[in-house]
Image 1: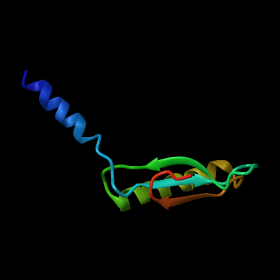
Image 2: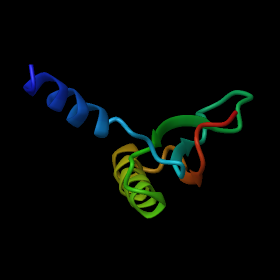
Image 3: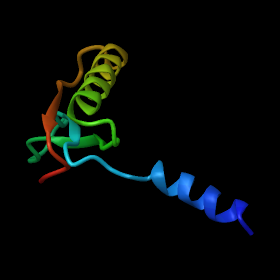
Length: 80
């Protein structure tokens, strides 16, 4: 019985979210939307950790898309 509560506590510790997420957006191919949400980086590592991961993803997406879209990171969770 002692092992299960410890395992549950460890699992829940990894599920915490940051109060300072960063969100990755891109320009739409066409249409009325000003931006499209790609991903939100909301790890418990804090603002700099989330910002760095967003920047890494941004660079990767821009390289893979070949300049078709503009990507950018914004401080905060997904907002319309």
